[in-house]
Length: 134
Image (cartoon, rainbow, N blue to C red; front, side, top):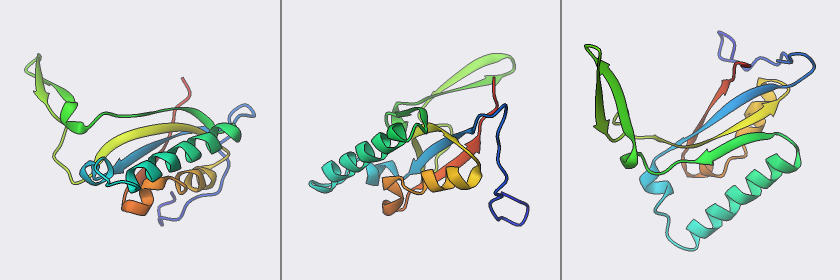
């Protein structure tokens, strides 16, 4: 995004390759994980269709669904000592439910790919972040 909030259309190509983007799937997991039938099965089928489209177009580089945030463990350092706590890093209305790593020509294409995610229909969000080459 530019400083004016408009997506920039410039290619992010390195050595002739498209740029990788991390698509973070965010939403209210109590709504997303507890959908009544047949909505729950339909949503799972929609995710399968979405994933298959990414694979068929050679855009997908990886991705996983995460277990509920209640199963998370958070690690912090306090005075050089590790401090572990159960649950997510922060209490928020939206939780991280999974991620995809995709390859796209530029941010506009990454936004287009992210815009097809099924959970957006339920008020979810996608955080789109460029990935550094390692």
